[in-house]
Image (tube, rainbow, N blue to C red; front, side, top):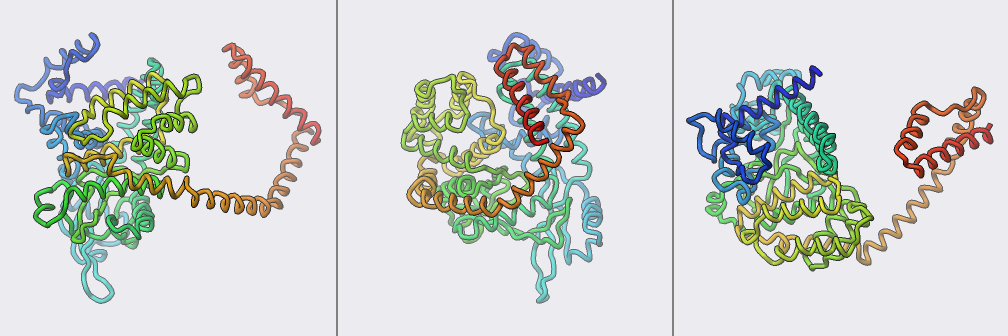
Length: 524
């Protein structure tokens, strides 16, 4: 009870801050149910009289609420077609221009983490050059064996940020559990699983050793790519709360004037960005999960350079195939194939028909096919997709949440560079290459080879399997001497199944229990 009161108090504070900063003025009350319209009207009563315009209200509120809320604002900054150009420009301030903490504090974090004075670790150590929600970056220099200096970027964790994030995540969990208990829609969207995914991501993002490992892995994956690279890691000066890496002398993707002045082709960069992201996701199953403009540069060779690898996404073979086939289906307008792959991987319940879902997919695909982004209302498209997932009872897939979010972000960045950017045309070469490589003749040959290797591994594992079987037999023998007893949890689960009237589940549970008993007796 006390914890619930604490959660409600902090959430009430968040609502109060949003109301004071005038965030409720951005909301159209006519689109809300009566109860929420009343809440918005009450919130407007406490709005500060000198609150800024719509372009500063939300960013001010999110900044006051803290780093967890800032992450949400970073996503909105890439969608000017949804939140408006003025608001999106203001929200960009949340990406890398937050108030820095003191250099003395940063030096203490570094010395505690690396166990040596800053002067010993770095020949030069400057003031912060960028500050974000979790960390800030300092420019420094290290001495190389030949006596020359190398510029490096030193990323330092904000003091106390882990404790603050954990508190906010606990509030998010409280809201998610509350929503799932009281709303079928909340349960379908698997809000608790979504917050769990966010919590894992944040935990990893605040351990810079893991970020360094992600940088290293991405460097290996993209070593042969001509249009993308990542900074080198200085492992000797990296720890849990400190990351030292190569300093990037490049132009930020958000600085279009500088890119044009340097002679770069913005349309080519937008295509390279989308294609690089898709290669990482489909080819490698490992992609950057936070590719907003503040994390992307263009070097003197025209290559895209990404930084800030705290949020990374992974896709298994099934998810890679799903992404490739869905994109390919939309590109060639094979909506039935798009629908079937949803059923094949289990994303749409079998109670629905492929034909009906194909019709729904066509309703999404046809209005956007062959059109540039400036001709598409992304707000309407996202609304339609949400309605269709609800109509067909599709539950949220946590493993795809980061992918979906990242694709929207990357598409938004590409559209900012090229207002007529066509995601389907840019995606086609990479998707077709994946299809030919994995579902064509080469892929089938490799599948056969992998199968033969798998058989060989099984044969080689037989001695180990026999050893494990002997261990299981011995333990079963020890169990029968004391008598076979069903665990209380098993009996309780059977009772719950029968109580719900689920006869098939109950019967299956009793059958499994009986088979276990027979097996134990025979082994004894």
